[in-house]
Image 1 (cartoon, rainbow, N blue to C red):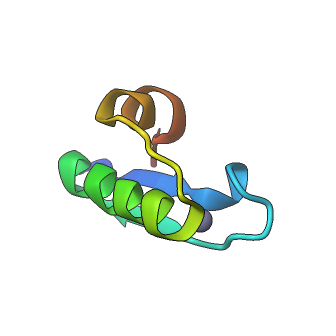
Image 2: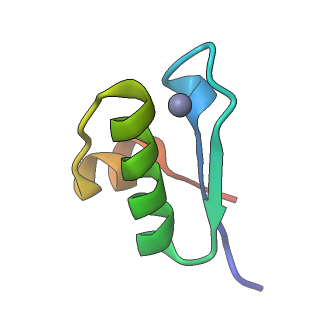
Length: 57
Ligand SMILES: [Zn+2]
């Protein structure tokens, strides 16, 4: 069984329903990074996303 990496943007921005989910951690991180930058104007490092925002489901 493979775990998926998931970031639910609702935990960051109450009005955003964006969810990223991928079995590939680096893909989940880059998708989340793009979303955070393009939609919210926030820059997150890989480490921040991996350690603080990504959930394993
Ligand atoms: Zn968002």
